[in-house]
Image (cartoon, rainbow, N blue to C red; front, side, top):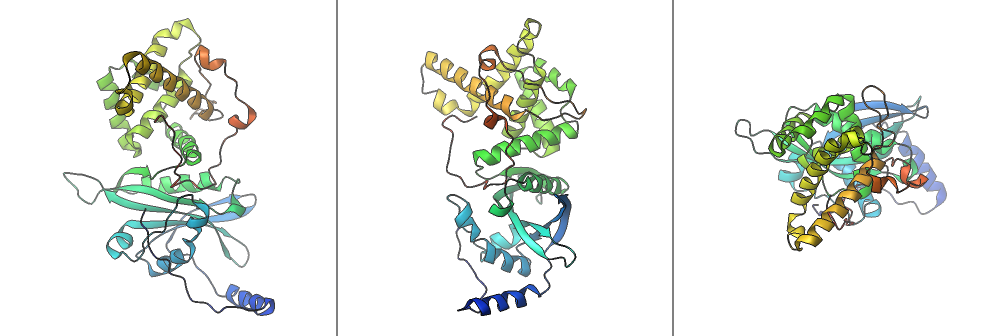
Amino acid sequence: MYIGTLSITRVDVSTDTRSFIQNMKATSEIPFTPPGRCVSQYIASSKSYEVFCASLSDPKCKQLFANIQILVLFLVEAGSLIDINDEEWSTNRWNIYFLYEKSNPKGYYSLVGYCTTFDYYWFSLDDSDNCRSRISQFIILPPFQNAGHGKKLYSIIISDLLSSERVREITVEDPSEIFEEMRDRSDLRRLLANDTFNSSTLEVLQLEPRDYDDYIEKTRMLSKTPKRQFARLLEMYLLSLVDQNKKSSYSAVAKYTTHVKRRLYRHNKDILSQLDSKDRIEKLEETYMSVVQDYAILIQGITNSSGRTLKRALSSKASRDTLNDEEEQEVDGDTQMSNSPVRKRVRR
């Protein structure tokens, strides 16, 4: 994250309640139009919401963001400010998605939250203008949390970036566990809705490791999803297709286990290589079981393109573990999502 100074518009200071209220009323009458373009609109609980996207090259956006980004220090653990005075970096690469509640009939805009994204290098032999887009800060203000706005804003941002021919991959910077859960559910729903994942996806289990990796690489590029994230989403969906409690599907279960463990081993090779053979096998098995249980929780309540709810498919060991009501509740993703220092000891 880039640390910078905070620019705040100079305003008159009120020393008593009466003058404060008068100043607030006078200010509220000033027409306000959000900077940038309107990306999407939606209605929730009979209220209207609009999402605008603006670049920091827009002076109005720059001034607005300079005055609100102090919220990062209060709402984002270990968060830091963006240096908006670095013209070469900030002006050309940062975009801000603002989520507003629009009141009628006067059309006042109330800030609900915002998300920052920045473009960075994407190697290309034929077109140097391509880029990756990375979601950085993601904030829903406390009064609007636990109402599904986080999921909605994330889905709108992804749809907007998918429509860009310039963006080749969409990544997330240092996500917290809460954000990661919301992201997994949203991405999985999207891939089911556009039929990237369907009943025939089970056939990929029959592929050899190299062909399996080629399938991931080819398919993920169409959805602009990072390789690790797409592999995890594929594993979640395959888990819903594999019935691990039937002997007739033993071969599919074995292949599924092999593919997942192979990815986990490569992802944690530096750590696992320091263990002896027995401990390495035990640790990999422990990590695999933990991952499968996490997947089983995540896919609860998610429906495929046919409207059918994804079923749980746990191994005999995992099926003995019960899920309490709190674990089965879906996270809305309205709390702070990025820059969290919390880390799982085993990378999944």
